[in-house]
Structures are given as C-alpha cells and as structure tokens.
Amino acid sequence: MEKKIIVAVDAMGGDFAPMEIVKGAVDAIKEFGVTIKLVGREADIKRELAQYTYDTDRLEVVNAEEVIGTDEVPTMAIRRKKDSSLVVGLNLVKNGEADAFVSAGSTGALLTGALLLIGRLEGVERPALGTCMPTKTGFSFMVDSGANVDCKAKYLEQFAKMGSVYVENIFGIENPKVALVNIGAEKEKGNALTKEAYELLEAAENINFVGNIEPRNVPYGEADVIVCDGFVGNTILKYMEGLAKTLLSIIKEEITVGKYKVAAAMLKTPFQNIKKRFDADEVGGAPFIGLKSLVVKAHGSSNAKAIKNAIGQCVLFCEADIIGKIKDKI
Image (cartoon, rainbow, N blue to C red):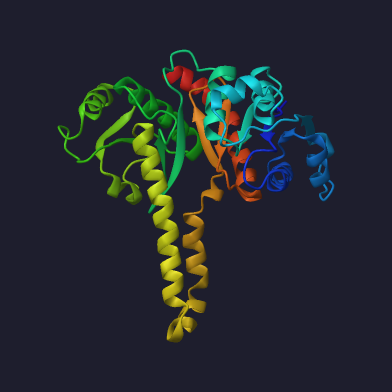
C-alpha cells in the first residue's frame, strides 16, 4: 500500500498568514493528494477554511495559540513559546506525526528550532539551506544559501554530497555536476576556505566535481549543484532576486510606452514565460537538508501558490527517500 505522506504547515508564519497559507494547503491537497496538518490558532484557520471545499479526511487543524515574530531572538523564542505554531509543528515531525514541516515564518527561529527539536542526521556536521536558482537551462541547486555563514571546508564537502543527492532524485539529473563558488575558475584562486574545499571536493569519489565557478557564470547553468558558505550563498541569492525584478521592471517600462505598445502586446506571452522562470513561487521554498526529517523554509512573502509548491516539494522529497540516500552518501 502506498504510504500516506503527512505535511505539517505553519499556518501563522509569513506576511500573508493565515489566509494564503490555508489556501495553499487546500490547493496542495487537491493537486498532490497529500494529508495536511495546519498548525496555528484554530479559530483563525477554520475561519479561512470555511471558504473552501476540500477532502476533510486529508486536513487536520492542530491548535497553537502563540506566534514567533521575525524580530524575536530565535533561541529564546523557541524555548519560551512552546505553544507557538512553529514549535508545535516541528514537534509533530519530531514525534513522527508528520513527515515534513513547512513554514514561511522567522528563518532564524525555524533553523534554530529544527536543530534543537529534530536534529542532524548522524555524520552531518552542519545542515544547510538549499535554494533552486533559475538558470538559462533550468535550475541550479545552491547549498548553502544562508544557514551557515561561517564554514569549514569539510562542511562544503558535505553540502556537495547532500546537494548531489537532492538534484539527482528531485530533478532527475544523473551524476549532477558540482561546482565551488570562487572568485576565479583556476584551482589556486580564492581564500583558505575555498582552496581547502577544492582539494576535498576534487578527491571525493562519489560526486562529479567540475571545479570552481564564478558567480557571473551561475545563471548560465554550467553546474547542477553550486557549493558555497551561507554568507556567500545568501548574498548571491538576494542580489539575483533584486536583479531579476529590476530587469523585468525596466523591460516593462521600456516596451509599454509610445510606439512600442503594439509590440508589447505581441510579446506578452514570451515575457510571462520569462517571468515564470524567475518566479520563486514556482519552487515554493528552500529545503533544510541534513536533518533527520525534512523542513522547508518558504519565503516570508509567500502566497498560496508558493505554499502549495513547497508542500509539493515535501511530497517529492519523501517519495524519493532523500533522508535515506543522504545517510548513505555521508
């Protein structure tokens, strides 16, 4: 019998909670056939649910009266707010009552809570956030994108291995190409961290290491897995997000004035397709890989589409047994 996948969702996390979170959960039930546990203030969640028709056997509301704000100190918030939607949701996964957890709430609190309550896989020194970066050829998976701002070379080697497992099983790319972010393509370039990491990655037997990659070449899709520390990764991620929005805005301004209006109408579909390729909502969230169970961090401004896709990512992750495969790889 096919295993029922249960995803706990933080209904109170994010800028548009609980409205968009609830809608995304309902859409996920319809599209993926997944079972959802919506965690948060029961009255608020049920008020939103009243607008929709869905399979009630596949959705449960788990009451949690407290909410952790983005301005709170993560460690203190996790310890003091035991009845918060984030802590209750993580405990559902810890206790085996859910297979994965999705939250658009505080990144710091989520990462801290995940480490304290769920814990690392044996052999994993530092779990990492993995982000799908849009490229000319599709996506590259970047690890780490913000969880570990200070790293050792050994961490980067493990990020490469975990990222390879994820890309191979989620994207279906056999023997994915792994590249190390650096300021030059040559082996001798970089700081002490990247030089030592290069040696480890080059010597690793179970990854397809293709050398260094400069940030400007990431959008070309030259590698399937991009490895870096969380400071560099988060900087690249935020710059690319801002650049994509700026370019799309400039293009829209330029072609929707004067004599170009007719051409703009003709190009509407191509530009919509381009926008979709750079739309973070298509992926939904960043998996926190290297934990004993899956935790996905959705963007704070996630809409229903992003939440739905983050839940869909959990389904794929669980069906592919990514946790088991990372254990074998590490």
